[in-house]
Image (cartoon, rainbow, N blue to C red; front, side):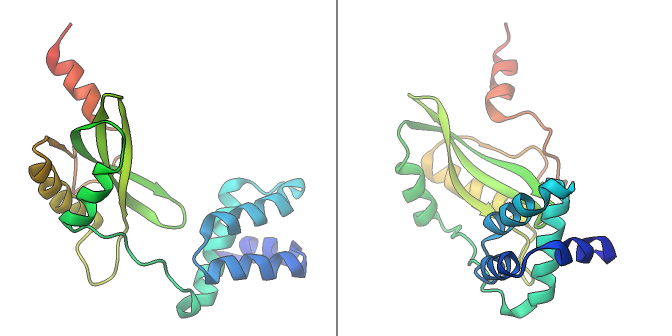
Length: 177
């Protein structure tokens, strides 16, 4: 992270530093980023740099951070979440996403009809000692799709790519004009 990030940290008021560290210790990344960005934006700090400052605080505070436990990927939990959304499940989809703090992760969503939309089921991050996020999301997504009797869509489970076509787009292309 180097001197520039720590240089930005030095510009923060002590009260803001305490707030940021308190948010990081509770694994509340976005409020921490917002605090850094709002305090230092007048000095030219961009959002990306604010994320890097917070990432450096995660590294500095290390094991003291009370990490948010991973969202459950078992079928009963996912099925309960899917059934809580208005609409009928049309598919289960896994999507790569990422940021500068967590790197690549996978969003598991249920695609809905009547009304059309989607519902967030889980965010699958890389965790030491567990399957890569693509493999874990693919396993859970396939199992949930089988349980719900709907298709499962995950274009590239082994290669992070957030620019691939979504399930509805693929369906429309398959249906033709």
